[in-house]
Length: 378
Image 1 (cartoon, rainbow, N blue to C red):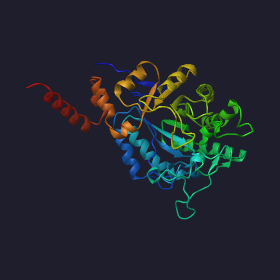
Image 2: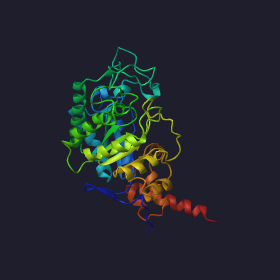
Image 3: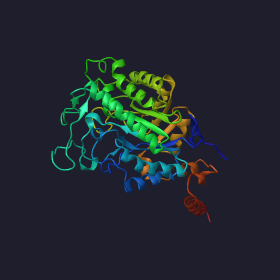
């Protein structure tokens, strides 16, 4: 049997992943009142039996005000738990670790769905009317977006409690992993970036102060989190904008997040000034991998690489050369849910069929045989 580092197991805190490929969180904007429905069950079932090591469901709002828009899934009410349980059960049935990304959109909330223009909601009437957005300071995302209400200490305490309660519900729903969304210009990232935070209290100014809110959210979650549930934190490794955060600041942030109890840093970038992850970085395959590599080494923490990871050989090299511990893939899996099976076959793994249900692997292996025979000279 040939070997592949991408298909080696990964173990942390008694959680074993059968391979290093993880479904990245991708918003679907299909929920009503934050609740899971048949769309989500069908959508995530496609990935549950695709051979992944683990999968994160989309950014899930910790409060109604924390939604990007009306289609976002939510976990602010106990009524949301039963629908989420159905998803974790599906993943468990197919040996795929399940994760949830907890999020608060902050000043990037109250937006229309992407296919409706991704603009701020303007109407004051009807079900999908705009709501008051909040942020660290009264600084809008750009000149065409509303000015957020600067958060008071009471607001900050309330949001920390929202994250903690969301984590409690995530545990009840059966998730193996929880990721705190601290990237892409949403609330936690906006506290960290000097472009969106000009506070003069303990949450603004110095690097230590700008890190404070994110670290306090992590500590709030850790206070109730069982040891066997992994805690991820997604960062924007650089703002990708003039006078934004420096990469070295994110290395320091990662070190402090590790001290607070984070197990894995999910290394994204951008988003502070646009939708959803606008950055000046040139987007080429693996353009964010250098961030995960340096944070892994310099902060001495496990990392997950994400962003334009397309080809199996590319993912294999990232793991082989210790540039990350896990690989998050999003749109490539949307385009091809059999990415894992095809990668295992490409690498000549004799157990490639084990990554799919019998009713898939049997017929796909016969398809592969037909293709091999047809490619040979008569």
